[in-house]
Length: 328
Image (tube, rainbow, N blue to C red; front, side, top):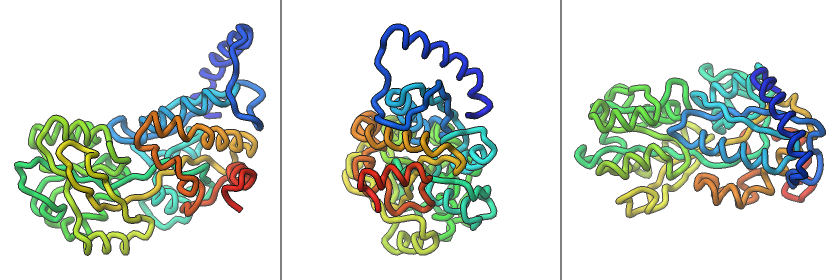
């Protein structure tokens, strides 16, 4: 349990005693549940992207399904901060982009904090590279942003990392100006013409991008086939993806792009039985979660959750997937 969870645990204990006395049914997880009130905190990102709403619905689902458990939500600047906070015990669970998770556990990126004890419960959604610009810019492709001022996301975030990789591969890093800003700030800066375009690396139907496209005449920019191929060569943790037609207003065609899995992570030191219960609750909640949050639609695909992950599963999660026959 995190330091910040101590007071919440006390309050939760009192509430649990009251609920028990009133005869209200507990959650539906069949085994491995906590025997005493337990408070966990899940790390997300800024509220304008996908991590925060995803973390919120995950927290609610885990709380509802596991007796004696309360999951709180914490905002952050994103994956890198979450990796650090998990390592020092400031978080119990965290949403972490797959590329950052791989770099953290293998020490392959000097700008990503190392955390060899990082483990995965499962993949929950995919983050996609999404560039939005006003129609007045007369741009169709990302490479049309040469000489422009671009919002690339919060400093140190996965949004910034993926934007800078794309700009470097497209040779725009020296021919454009990158500005750090949250997704909400990027929307306001785009409206006030302080920036010419903004980047999001998150699930499709991202709130900030939806808000921009609903309130401004905008276009979702494309990569060429060669540009996508070179981005995937540069960073093998990325894979081909598509922003489906109709995701945003006036988007009439599929937009080819690249993406990465976003993982629900814990530290390897977390109790194996607790992780088993968390994994079971996640698995059993998939239909409800995908209905509650569009970004979680991939959860309904068994293989997406527990196969081809960039870091190892926690042993509690691995045991659950073996028990149900999802993995060997």
